[in-house]
Image (cartoon, rainbow, N blue to C red; front, side):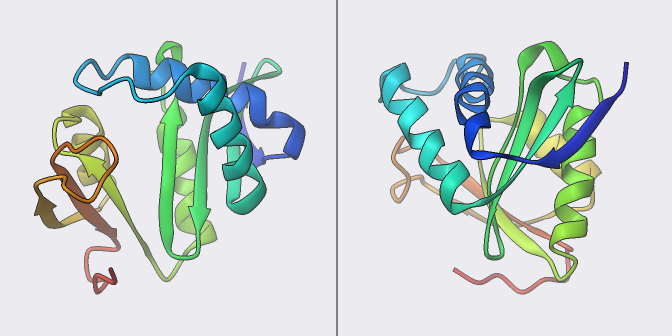
Length: 152
């Protein structure tokens, strides 16, 4: 079976939310701030307002990425597809969709994601104490390509 990338449709939102919930559940350092129903409603708004791509395998959504202007707001893969190149396929689609570059935040504790982005040519632009994010956890601003000027 092959994993393919396509644009998300509005009716994909619930399945996308399940990927988001499952992936974030593996991030044991995250505080639990919202119910699953609140998260599903949030992801519904993401799908409506962002350019969203899904990774689909065997008829199921196994990952997604959401772009807003020159920001990568979300890139999540279902835990069953960690280290299976699903994120790499989504990231390639994002680079195609934003050839002039983009920027994004990652929690500093998310070492796996940070290694993934650095392997894929992203550059660390800034570290913060997390005061500006909802979780209040230290985060890291990355840019792609590495020569891109940071725009906050």
